[in-house]
Length: 411
Image: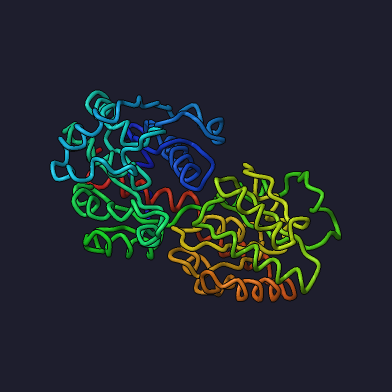
């Protein structure tokens, strides 16, 4: 297949704006940063729009990607702007999820995003995460102009909407049903997420394009060989179970801790959890209650989890829901065996319904423990795992995003 013209001729470069809250540690920030690097390398002008210029990936932004810090407005001004764009949103304007009373959320940056679109007029505005998506679409309607807006859903929303702890999200699907049809493109990071968006919004499934996240296998492999300063990862040490993710309810680390206690009762093993979040105190207390705290290490967020993956005996994902579960693909790229809950959505697609890793029911700590023990006793061929990861090549995935963003754009 011949290369698209937009890759061959930098003079045809477009102006692409990427909109996310910040470069805080997490899959979305890493994903957007990788896309920005790729687009810039193809001769396109790239603006990275941030509500907060902060996060551990900030120093990885290349010189040819321009950081644009949006300015926050007062909550009331943002409310009036949103209402001007979506007059049916009057009932929703008091929602704390969109208009918080403490830290600013993306909606507080709506007026400045409108100003940016009117003054800068990028060819495409691409946003990720639901609040940013709504703000991007409201801004386009207020700004007018020809900017093409493409929104990306990164996770299945139904589990969040149905969660008692996340009750405010129940009001979001009606807003999405009104606003998402305005988008020039909607992309989901897995088929399961696409199905979920269609179900929640009533948007026909064929209007939602699934593009998997890229896995930078070569870069991951290189970083996986970096020195690792942790006393548990030395030759002939006790096997280590690894988990990576934010310490939030979505990841269901209590289930993993209970499973680890069962594994530990059968054999000598340790657990390392990489990530940070608001549940750290609760998880540390639970580990103490379960009597396993001396065999658990929680070092916090790390920019290079791959050095851990390359040395771990198994990666365990206990999530209640996911979008794509990047960490699974990254572990496969390191040749690390994976045990994951069969949560919506992503793990089953990445692991090809269990062909490249073990899937267990969500919330079932016994099944999780049994699967971990099986992998510890009989690990799979690491080269076979790496071959699966190579199917999600960065250039291939990023090119698919570029084609979607520039659809119907003239040279």
